[in-house]
Length: 130
Image (tube, rainbow, N blue to C red; front, side, top):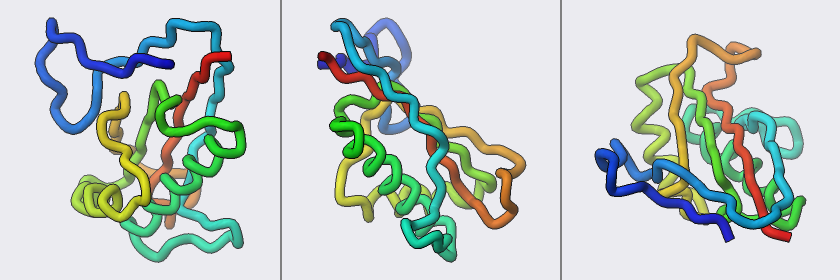
């Protein structure tokens, strides 16, 4: 199992995440492309909060399809196109059916994504011991 933690030799994380993830056993690695707020039918959620929920759900489905879970995530990068969407990001996390707090996460604000209506993209890496 991976060790997700924050060394006490550093300042405490600025939010609910950990500083690192240690993969100490031979593992299968999974690189997950950026997930968007688009459902299986190709419908884009109408607002930032809905897109964030759907992007996390999509990431979760990719993990499941590869026989992995959230505990296997070792790196998550969240790209938001607007700083004003940060409250929606927090609200979206509370709507998820699973807890994404404490993951080794980087939140990045970008000028835009490929399509102008896309508000969020979430990419990740996971590792699961053989």
